Image 1 (cartoon, helix red, strand yellow):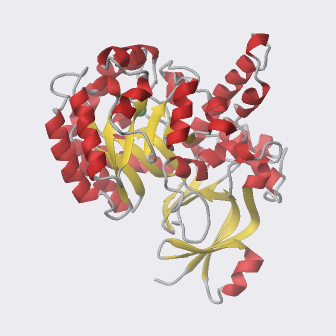
Image 2 (spheres, helix red, strand yellow):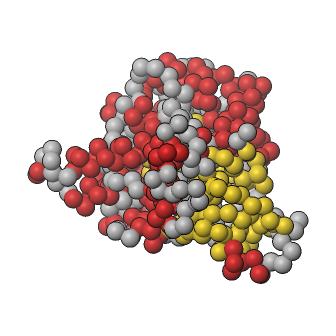
Image 3 (cartoon, rainbow, N blue to C red):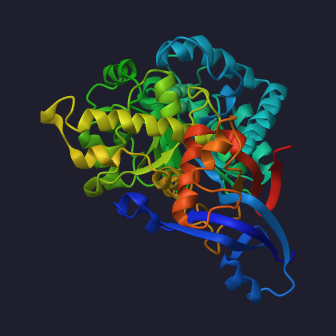
Length: 465
Ligand code: GUN
Ligand code: ZN
């Protein structure tokens, strides 16, 4: 296939904005009139139109006008079999799982149900501008197969794995460690590195895992060191207490996963609301990542994730952001940024000295503020770094995969166009600062209605009708 070009207004990142205090725009890259050149789904050239176009005489170009084009959004933590049951009323984590989640996920043993659920799931991702996700499936291999099959049909870069649980769930939902090991092996052989699929060894959480199940996970990771590891960590106080009761001798929640050799590069622990300073430091030192899931942490009442602590430059923890749908009540990473901003502001109040002067930490208070630079970096290049996918995804550097989203900054609630006209009139953004101001309103005032087009490997898979 020959090269094709996409011309429009581009916004992406070349660095982590938290490293550019007071000059966050230096981490971003903006072309009011840019050109992206794609061949076989891979970016081969990128830059200002006037600089790039002369290098590609005769290039067939698609113009996307009146939009800001960003790298596709990366959801670092989502539950595919919870698509139908998002937003379930009235419980914190542990009773919520029993009442709403396990009964729904059980249905994914049925191949037809799982296939229909997978189709709906990926339609919803694309309509939200999410081009990559790291997903939990259920304890049934059928659900994992149907997830990868649908991702393959869409040619999307995904990470997922059979989701192991052998305690604290109904008898017909739990699995044995031996079956989990056998089925995981077969799924790794069939799907890992097949097309754009990647496999994560996925113990659901330490609260639902016996030592034997975690030993099997350790064995899988040793036998397949190239695989990812995905799980939950320190989400809810009752869960945290239960983990220490069930795994006596563990120093803390992270210590359970450390004991089985799971913590290191390519490890993701979702939530981390109740991680201690020491656990953050150990995650930082090992190269493990935490996934910030603010919609879910608020919806289930789990608590306020300490963004400013995770981003401590002395002990920086890799971080991706996730919806955690259905614990999160939204599919859209734009809603995640909305809630991330509000969590950050609550933390800011707790640390600025106004509540308790003895707990004042001005630097950490500031790091909690979710600027549009920090926010959009976190769901693109930062999310890719958290998942160790930044060699393939996250910005428009040549060599990366051409997954991107075109945002209509005026779309959303009726309030949006007039609000945005404070920043730009009829024309589009001319500077990186104007673009960032428009994007802040996209994350705070709009939602997935701002997603106009979603492209996968240089092909448009979603267009808002
Ligand atoms: N911990 C174990 N399973 C789950 C789940 O499905 N959702 C959330 N939010 N936390 C979990
Ligand atoms: Zn989760």
